[in-house]
Image (cartoon, rainbow, N blue to C red; front, side, top):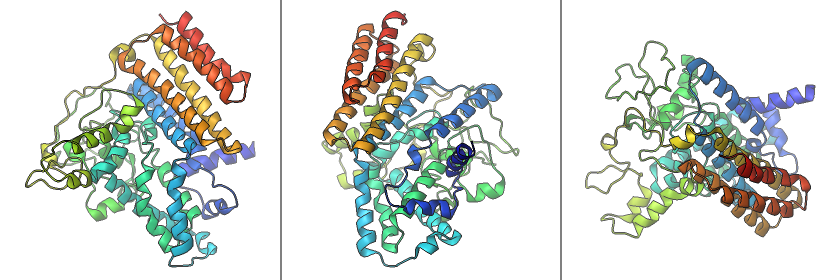
Length: 464
């Protein structure tokens, strides 16, 4: 019992950057570094459940099922990227630069001290600020990061809506740490803790923290502004853990604004959380300036890059280099600033027009349960495949086959959410196909047949 409580305490403290230097230093042991972000999934789900109950009972808000499933599916897609082995390639330059070109030899004792812990926190967080800022201010890189902003809602599941290939560009600013002499294990631990910290700030359940914390830390209040599509919210509050970087570099904008200058009130029955302190809380509309109309993972992940390629193949009328390297709002005008003119951006509609299909969102619970069963199956088998790949070093070709089948399944249930319609024969056939595939892939285990066969039977006997 004590071991179980200690493990739970470790995971929860990881989410708030409350590990000690000794605990972080333990990751230097031989063997692969524990992947913190993929070992605390149960803690994520517990926090999501608590947030759901609190918002529903206290503020009469409810989660939109389509959005939650879309967010969790993005998390699954990220797991599939790691499963395929693509992301591990991007650590190679860091290891090379540290081993061959570091300027300082820093002792392990330094990194085991609180001073070393603080230095690493500051350096990694500083780099994260610039990684995040460049992800918004360079059109090509925004194509990856926009995935995280494409939800029209803001709750803890939004934190899990992640791009699958962001790592192919975001490793570059961190290379400076390798030249300084920050060991890879320290960088990786602090990078994970930095990202884990940002999970709990994706919520509307917390209004504001005490002023001393709001001044130093990135909080739910600050990060809500970052996720807004109101003109005032665009290109603000890039912080990971410490909001001081935004204050220093001029990108900080508070959620609460005493003058309420030029803010359009977004009336929405979901937003019943009352502002504190007598100030005016910005009524924030979340999502992209031009929102998507689908939950298709392929479209969500790559639609902006499709747009960029199409634009580059056409006659833009201005520099294509600027189109790629300037902000997504840049229009090529003679006096257009690098990031575009925020004042010309469309003001969010009032009330907010949510894009979930109403026939699915407010329709039969039986169809919703069908989608949830399919997503649950993907979670179960994705985790199983991930562990199998780590323990038996599965061939890359087999991993890619699994990824293709995974994409087929998630595209199927996301299409149901988009249209609110289904084809019974298609669901049954897909369930039987998946049963055969999993039975083969997982070395003929009978247990893996249960979920896909149950889904097929459910489609035949239960769905209206």
